[in-house]
Length: 499
Ligand code: HEC
Ligand code: HEC
Ligand code: HEC
Ligand code: HEC
Ligand code: HEC
Ligand code: HEC
Figure 1 (tube, protein in one colour):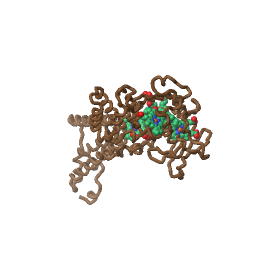
Figure 2 (tube, rainbow, N blue to C red; figure 1 turned 45 degrees about the vertical axis):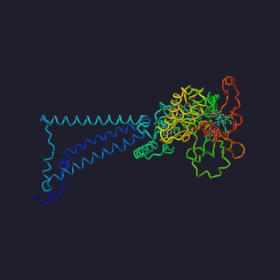
Figure 3 (cartoon, rainbow, N blue to C red; figure 1 turned 90 degrees about the horizontal axis):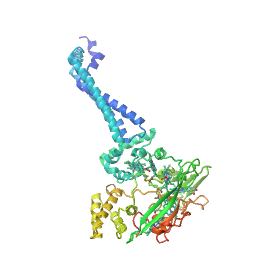
Figure 4 (cartoon, protein in one colour; figure 1 turned 120 degrees about the horizontal axis):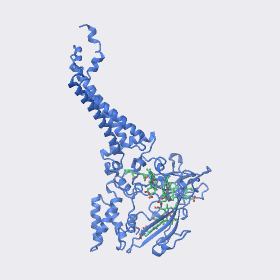
């Protein structure tokens, strides 16, 4: 044997032939399928109008892992095969070449079987990835698979106006930047889910909140002029007779687009004619000391509170959008006071049960470690309060139902953690800015605050016959003892009953 023969690399066909072993072939099949699945997932992800974070895990982690696994198997097969060929007899490699002879029946059968099997495998891969896509896209996946951490949001969502809107429609927006951010965030969430070290409660900054233009406004037409909305708020006092007290009012929702109606009212904040920007000094945006308005004529007015003397350059300026008022469009946790009022107004709690309002609220606001403990203790408490009362079973059931829908002890979530900003009774809401304390540079004019008719007209209030006296021009609010109608309602009202 000449020297050249030994040192020269084996010819290509010999090297390729070393791939003809079962491990390499299986690896190749796996790699091709994984690649196929990747392409499919990738294109679905790319063209789906509302992509979802878990798709990213499938497309960019799971599929490529299988691809690498397949390629590794091909390589290992190749190396093992190389070892089997004695170094000094490279010509033996040709023994390993697959000889397929189509005139042989056995070969024909094997080949058809192999091709058929491969096609079937590819088909199942395609079907599998498509099905997985649908499952991960669904609300059940968001709300139930990720059961413990998302349970509060999922439960509240099912009772919201958006119960038929997919989670991903609000939480994942289109666009390349968002797209990649969501993928990364989805993987991070899965990781915390597996380790079970997620925050309790889930903090706001843990969900990527998309701007309203990409989410809310993909369904809601921002130019719409809503005009006045008539709303009724039914309450019951925490006294022996559960005295009813109702407020009926016209909310001046208005609109923001001069093409479709006058620019007026509550929706005039939306960034068409006017643009409102603000600085919040806390993550929950509860404290807003600085506000800037730019109107249609480019007139800029800055309002700030007296206490806020900081240099604004160290703060992020946020443009106000839907979610600064409608911050709980689909995960609203009722206050115990509000939830019991609702149950009484709708007849689920009998208002003729003495002290029912006060007692049910009291049962709800105790601290319980788990739902089971809450259910037991609520039952124990109410049975003790109403000995020999037939209606107590129904009362217990309803109280437990209120608890179940609005309190999540395992995740430490209730109305206190996620206050609703839409009004001003139980949270500072609108009064974060409309408190009369945000002054323009002249030091005098403020964002409207103490004018109770700026946002709504109370057209009727009280109970029974009082509610028949409707006043088109609006009434002065008659508070329970007529003295406490100070703007900062939530200094007293905190979602529980007032002593
Ligand atoms: C109509 C739009 C909308 C839909 C649909 C929606 N969300 Fe939300 N979600 C929001 C907004 C807005 C917030 C931020 C709330 C805030 O700023 O206080 C939020 C917050 C959250 C949070 C953070 C914790 C919290 O309560 O603030 C989680 C978790 C969450 N959503 C999960 C879900 C899940 C799961 C679904 C589907 C079952 C879903 N969301 C559907 C709008 C939506
Ligand atoms: C996928 C479409 C879709 C998206 C996205 C969406 N909404 Fe809605 N929204 C609806 C529909 C449909 C209704 C009406 C439901 C009904 O009346 O049955 C609605 C109702 C509402 C209402 C009236 C609620 C009520 O109690 O009657 C408000 C307020 C609202 N949406 C705000 C928002 C905000 C804020 C966002 C963004 C965080 C948002 N929506 C995102 C479709 C959507
Ligand atoms: C300044 C606060 C504020 C902003 C900003 C705001 N809204 Fe509203 N919106 C309200 C109030 C208050 C109501 C009256 C309903 C209520 O009190 O629950 C309302 C009512 C609505 C309704 C119900 C209308 C009806 O006919 O029933 C919809 C839908 C709505 N808003 C959508 C939006 C959308 C979409 C955006 C963002 C483009 C937005 N809102 C921005 C405060 C606001
Ligand atoms: C981030 C601060 C901020 C918040 C929060 C806020 N507003 Fe405003 N609002 C403003 C500013 C600024 C103006 C414009 C004042 C001006 O033109 O000088 C305004 C104007 C208004 C007007 C128009 C007054 C008029 O007659 O021109 C109404 C009505 C109104 N807001 C209602 C609400 C309601 C209802 C809420 C709560 C759901 C709310 N606002 C929350 C800052 C805020
Ligand atoms: C900046 C706008 C704004 C101003 C100013 C304002 N309100 Fe309101 N108010 C609202 C909104 C918005 C709601 C509706 C909240 C909701 O739909 O849950 C509301 C609701 C109410 C309710 C019904 C609450 C309930 O749960 O029964 C009363 C009563 C009320 N306001 C009284 C007043 C009084 C009194 C003043 C003057 C000190 C005042 N408001 C000033 C925006 C305003
Ligand atoms: C100084 C404390 C105080 C202030 C400030 C105050 N309230 Fe009240 N409010 C009470 C008390 C006490 C009751 C009686 C509670 C009961 O019997 O359940 C009450 C009852 C009510 C009720 C009927 C029952 C209920 O629990 O919902 C409404 C509605 C109400 N207040 C709205 C307001 C509004 C709106 C403001 C701001 C404009 C306001 N209150 C400011 C103390 C206050």
